[in-house]
Image (cartoon, rainbow, N blue to C red; front, top):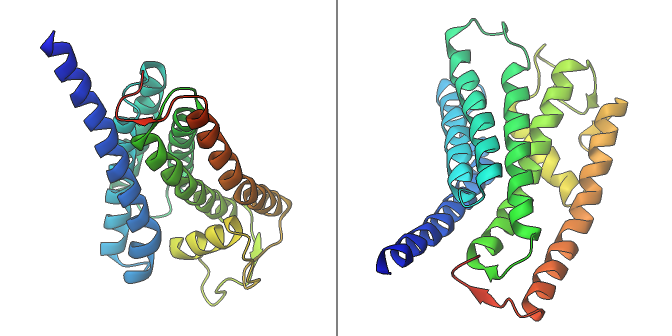
Length: 234
């Protein structure tokens, strides 16, 4: 009887720990790393790839209790990680947008899986609360990848970028623009021009307005329904 309980307790600790680490990695990826290193430096590129790898791995561990979603995100994350590191072996510019596309798909699916975990029925667990915060930051990261991909695929999709060099804006710029849009601050220094860029910006701003209210309402309703907060989730 003790062995199943021990395994269940270990599984709960793994979920909570993984979700906490995922949240910390996302905070570092968004608020620390892009603005503390030169965007085009070798160290910055390496750390960005390392952070993406760790985010995907911890995200996989955080949803390990959901078998179907776990299998899907594991497969997609593995492809994204392999493509990301294989890009170091090919000449720069030989795979335009491919690494961004795989990162976008893998982070998007990870966000969807965490969203299912956050909004599904059950008790209001600590890892679910951490997941709700991580998902909000992850939305901004996913949209930053989408904006960067649009800028690569569509010329002059945005205005207000640094136009003195014939190369896309650095990743920190897209992180900045994404979270300014998500929080609906809208400083106006970067403006989407292409229809695809404008559609993405509108959708992100709408999500930024609705997400906090929806999450709060969902967690409160689950708690009021008798779930309460706990360490385990059935």
